[in-house]
Length: 88
Image (cartoon, rainbow, N blue to C red; front, side):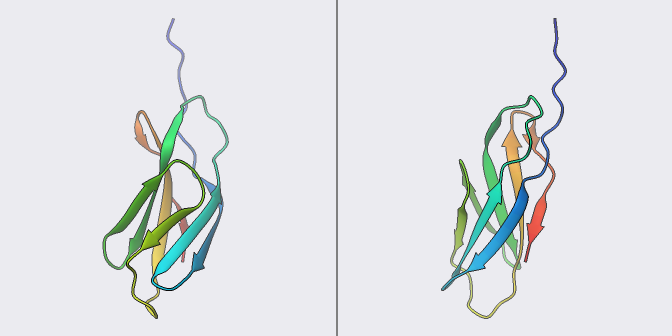
């Protein structure tokens, strides 16, 4: 029999901690929905900065000091990414 799996939810409690040309994004995993989480993807704009990793925190490097960035974070699953959580 087929078991319906609910889509992934967004990570929570996302905190962006800036450093010298980096941003560290810490977060709590989303509540389980039945779909396994294979990892997480963080993106920051302006620019096309992206990093993937298995767990919190994710660290984005190569940023410009003094530039405000908006960052998004999604959980990755077999059906693709879930909804984004944001930090700036």
